[in-house]
Length: 148
Image (cartoon, rainbow, N blue to C red; front, side, top):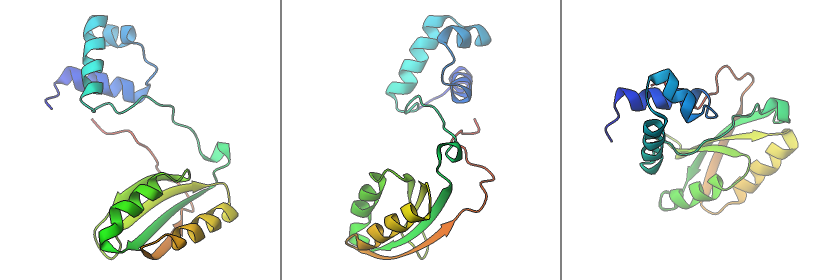
Protein backbone atom coordinates (compact mmCIF):
# COMPACT_ATOMS: atom_id res chain seq x y z
CA UNK A 1 0.00 0.00 0.00
CA UNK A 2 1.62 3.15 -1.18
CA UNK A 3 0.43 6.19 0.72
CA UNK A 4 1.43 9.61 -0.49
CA UNK A 5 1.51 12.82 1.55
CA UNK A 6 -2.06 13.67 0.56
CA UNK A 7 -3.30 10.31 1.87
CA UNK A 8 -1.42 10.87 5.13
CA UNK A 9 -2.89 14.36 5.54
CA UNK A 10 -6.41 13.06 4.90
CA UNK A 11 -5.85 10.33 7.48
CA UNK A 12 -4.53 12.85 10.02
CA UNK A 13 -7.59 15.06 9.61
CA UNK A 14 -10.04 12.17 9.85
CA UNK A 15 -8.22 10.68 12.81
CA UNK A 16 -8.45 14.01 14.63
CA UNK A 17 -12.19 14.28 13.94
CA UNK A 18 -13.96 11.66 11.86
CA UNK A 19 -16.89 14.05 11.42
CA UNK A 20 -14.77 16.37 9.26
CA UNK A 21 -16.58 16.76 5.96
CA UNK A 22 -14.94 16.00 2.63
CA UNK A 23 -15.51 19.62 1.70
CA UNK A 24 -13.62 20.83 4.78
CA UNK A 25 -10.76 18.40 4.09
CA UNK A 26 -10.68 19.49 0.45
CA UNK A 27 -10.50 23.17 1.48
CA UNK A 28 -7.71 22.54 4.01
CA UNK A 29 -5.62 20.54 1.55
CA UNK A 30 -6.41 22.46 -1.65
CA UNK A 31 -8.11 19.48 -3.29
CA UNK A 32 -11.46 18.89 -4.94
CA UNK A 33 -14.22 17.23 -2.92
CA UNK A 34 -14.27 14.40 -5.48
CA UNK A 35 -10.57 13.73 -4.96
CA UNK A 36 -11.02 13.52 -1.19
CA UNK A 37 -14.06 11.26 -1.61
CA UNK A 38 -12.18 8.91 -3.96
CA UNK A 39 -9.14 8.74 -1.71
CA UNK A 40 -11.20 8.02 1.42
CA UNK A 41 -13.11 5.37 -0.51
CA UNK A 42 -9.81 3.75 -1.61
CA UNK A 43 -8.30 3.95 1.89
CA UNK A 44 -11.43 2.30 3.26
CA UNK A 45 -11.56 -0.44 0.61
CA UNK A 46 -7.87 -1.22 1.22
CA UNK A 47 -8.58 -1.59 4.94
CA UNK A 48 -6.37 1.31 5.99
CA UNK A 49 -9.46 3.04 7.38
CA UNK A 50 -11.21 0.33 9.38
CA UNK A 51 -14.17 2.39 10.59
CA UNK A 52 -15.38 5.80 11.63
CA UNK A 53 -16.27 5.96 15.29
CA UNK A 54 -16.81 8.07 18.37
CA UNK A 55 -14.34 7.84 21.23
CA UNK A 56 -16.16 7.79 24.56
CA UNK A 57 -14.87 8.61 28.05
CA UNK A 58 -15.19 5.28 29.92
CA UNK A 59 -15.09 6.80 33.40
CA UNK A 60 -17.90 9.26 32.63
CA UNK A 61 -19.99 6.26 31.56
CA UNK A 62 -19.29 4.36 34.77
CA UNK A 63 -16.43 2.12 33.63
CA UNK A 64 -14.14 2.89 36.54
CA UNK A 65 -11.81 -0.12 36.33
CA UNK A 66 -9.32 -0.91 33.61
CA UNK A 67 -7.89 -4.41 33.93
CA UNK A 68 -4.79 -5.78 32.24
CA UNK A 69 -5.05 -9.57 32.22
CA UNK A 70 -2.18 -11.86 31.25
CA UNK A 71 -3.11 -15.40 30.34
CA UNK A 72 -1.37 -18.71 29.82
CA UNK A 73 -3.23 -20.99 27.44
CA UNK A 74 -2.62 -24.45 26.04
CA UNK A 75 -0.65 -23.68 22.85
CA UNK A 76 -2.88 -25.39 20.31
CA UNK A 77 -5.91 -23.44 21.56
CA UNK A 78 -4.59 -19.87 21.78
CA UNK A 79 -6.54 -18.64 18.74
CA UNK A 80 -9.79 -20.20 19.98
CA UNK A 81 -9.41 -18.59 23.40
CA UNK A 82 -8.52 -15.24 21.81
CA UNK A 83 -11.62 -15.34 19.61
CA UNK A 84 -13.84 -16.12 22.62
CA UNK A 85 -12.27 -13.30 24.65
CA UNK A 86 -12.64 -10.85 21.77
CA UNK A 87 -16.41 -11.44 21.75
CA UNK A 88 -16.73 -10.53 25.44
CA UNK A 89 -18.26 -7.04 25.87
CA UNK A 90 -15.84 -5.73 28.54
CA UNK A 91 -12.79 -6.61 26.43
CA UNK A 92 -11.42 -3.70 24.39
CA UNK A 93 -8.17 -5.32 23.20
CA UNK A 94 -6.70 -8.80 22.79
CA UNK A 95 -3.04 -9.31 21.95
CA UNK A 96 -0.82 -12.31 21.20
CA UNK A 97 2.36 -11.74 23.17
CA UNK A 98 5.77 -13.26 23.69
CA UNK A 99 7.25 -14.28 27.02
CA UNK A 100 5.83 -16.25 29.93
CA UNK A 101 2.23 -15.51 28.93
CA UNK A 102 0.42 -16.10 25.64
CA UNK A 103 -2.34 -13.48 25.65
CA UNK A 104 -2.92 -10.07 27.17
CA UNK A 105 -6.34 -8.52 27.28
CA UNK A 106 -7.40 -5.03 28.25
CA UNK A 107 -10.92 -4.76 29.61
CA UNK A 108 -13.15 -2.11 31.20
CA UNK A 109 -15.48 -2.75 34.12
CA UNK A 110 -18.03 -0.77 36.10
CA UNK A 111 -16.78 -2.19 39.38
CA UNK A 112 -15.08 -4.99 41.28
CA UNK A 113 -18.06 -7.34 41.13
CA UNK A 114 -18.13 -7.17 37.33
CA UNK A 115 -14.37 -7.78 37.16
CA UNK A 116 -14.63 -10.65 39.64
CA UNK A 117 -17.32 -12.39 37.59
CA UNK A 118 -15.34 -11.91 34.38
CA UNK A 119 -12.14 -13.40 35.86
CA UNK A 120 -14.00 -16.39 37.24
CA UNK A 121 -15.68 -16.95 33.86
CA UNK A 122 -12.29 -16.70 32.09
CA UNK A 123 -10.70 -19.21 34.46
CA UNK A 124 -13.53 -21.66 33.68
CA UNK A 125 -12.79 -21.46 29.95
CA UNK A 126 -11.33 -24.64 28.48
CA UNK A 127 -7.58 -24.53 27.83
CA UNK A 128 -6.90 -21.51 30.08
CA UNK A 129 -4.11 -22.55 32.42
CA UNK A 130 -3.44 -19.38 34.40
CA UNK A 131 -4.19 -15.68 34.55
CA UNK A 132 -2.68 -12.68 36.31
CA UNK A 133 -4.76 -9.53 36.62
CA UNK A 134 -3.56 -6.01 37.28
CA UNK A 135 -5.80 -3.01 37.76
CA UNK A 136 -4.75 0.35 36.36
CA UNK A 137 -4.65 2.88 39.18
CA UNK A 138 -4.39 5.89 36.89
CA UNK A 139 -4.80 6.17 33.14
CA UNK A 140 -1.97 8.42 31.96
CA UNK A 141 -2.56 7.90 28.24
CA UNK A 142 -5.15 5.89 26.39
CA UNK A 143 -5.42 6.73 22.75
CA UNK A 144 -6.03 4.84 19.54
CA UNK A 145 -4.64 7.58 17.31
CA UNK A 146 -1.48 6.83 15.36
CA UNK A 147 1.35 9.30 14.99
CA UNK A 148 1.42 9.74 11.20
